[in-house]
Image (cartoon, rainbow, N blue to C red):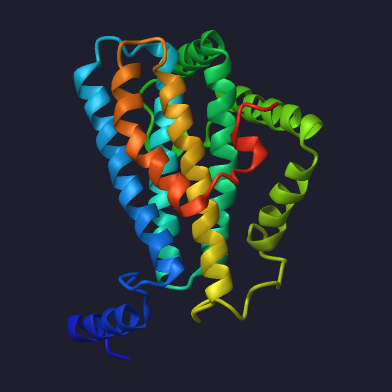
Length: 254
């Protein structure tokens, strides 16, 4: 086995050759292009909000802002994983996005709590002093437990009104999030039209949720009209490729 630059480039080229380009008229290609372009647009909108309205962004927005950005990176990862037929890992990204949406919804529902959680986090961070990143990562921040409680509370509230959400969540938890599950093992590395369509569609659903929560995060600032106007083409595109059949848990219906 040769660990050379040439060998690396050869393997990269082989991986690229087997990947999907999403440049044709296939329905899945349209879903993939929408997912990728929308991610870029949301990053642009978020960046302009941070630049133009940074003086209005306070501690009551920081947690939501942080997890929104992490969510966008997860959507980007989902697109790349589907492109290369890595469906197990892509399903794990969907679960992450699912939890991110409920966390954002809970934080936006009580921005005073969001501010308190962030303040508590800063205080704990200051108490740690000058520690390396490993120690910081291993520290059991109380804010982490509180954030978990926020997303779980929001999820439980949804389940009371829409019990099907439990089946939805359990599917992704059991499908790919635990190494003891064998389901789907034979699919990875080989194109599956059905898996591809499901993952891209779910990615767009979760992206729809992120878009709504971005607006809610800054709806108490003068950035709201800007976000609403800039996100209109995105929402219109969602309607075009997904129709009106948005899962209930992504709407204000519980």
